[in-house]
Structures are given as structure tokens and as C-alpha cells.
Image (cartoon, rainbow, N blue to C red):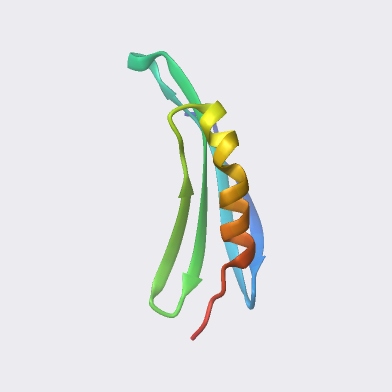
Length: 76
């Protein structure tokens, strides 16, 4: 796995952490990009994950991930 890249993201009133990295699957001869978003809530963290079979599929699903991230609401 590559070194994860972390960045802070504002989701409503809270600061979340987004992480991107490339996972290496040597047995399948595949390297694929993955992305995670950890959002703190009153009941623990909510995790939004984007994987895919390969990086191409990951990139095709990225607009849905961005839509979910941009419309996420954290309430009490």
C-alpha cells in the first residue's frame, strides 16, 4: 500500500478526515486507488468508503462518492 494521504474536510459543523491511497494486490497483479472519509458523530465515527475492483472502476464511482460527501449532514 502506498503512504496514505490525509486531509481535513468540513462536513457541516464538524471536521472530518479524508484519506486516499493505492492498495497493491500482488496475487491478483492489481493496484487500485481507494478513498475513505471518517466523520465524527455523537455516536461514534461514520465511515464512507470508496473502493472498486480496480482504479478505473474507482474513478467511475467517484462522482457518487463526491455526491454522498457533499450532501452528508451531521446532526445531534
